[in-house]
Length: 118
Image 1 (spheres, rainbow, N blue to C red):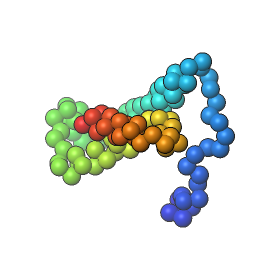
Image 2 (image 1 turned 90 degrees about the vertical axis):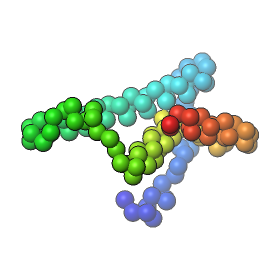
Image 3 (image 1 turned 60 degrees about the horizontal axis):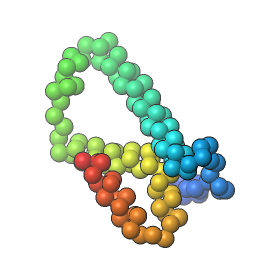
């Protein structure tokens, strides 16, 4: 996908978000849980593929994964990926805050992201 075509894709769905539970907070948690489940499922499939390829090719023992120490550059990349992941999981909360004029909530959320991403 080109940069130009990505800009044409709307960031928010039009219309009101459907509500499945009586409490809107439960709906938000439900959306977050579904996003986590999706992310984890894809990750588990990819990890299984990698481990099978490693084993089939005899590249290294599985305990090498446990003993791996990332470089500072890898740590930076992991932190960036973690922040993107948290944003995807907490998308419904982020959208609500963008719609809200209360900047104190945005500050609170950014603090939560900093704490969770450590």
